[in-house]
Length: 162
Image (cartoon, rainbow, N blue to C red):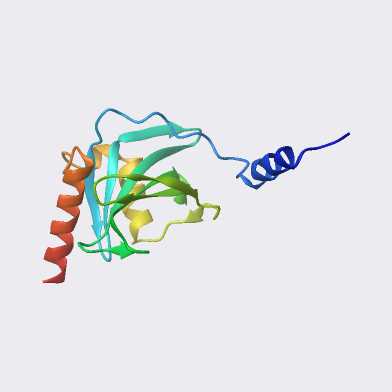
């Protein structure tokens, strides 16, 4: 049996993809982003994406970069990530990262192959797990658009530096 190079490459890509990767749930029309942590980056949880996933929950977050953040001569607002949390076991699994350039251009998604890990008492994963496992614990959304999330995050980052 002859196998083409293209078929072999497609097979390798499929083998390299995480076996448990599930497609992301459909995105809502408008995000409901709440600021959950401000350190080097500002992290917002997207309440509109909290979705049951087996014995856990999935949620998307947006990480806002400081004003003037650049990589490879490109200016970036930050990036989106899908997460999966096991609320009972207190584990978090960051599934991917999608960079967002200034102006809103996204992509591509880069899968995060690291396995789920225990969540400590602090850090981005802890803040996001709290929201994902108990969305009612947070108030109203701080932003309902990507542009507003960047504004909210950068304002928080500037205030933290003072």
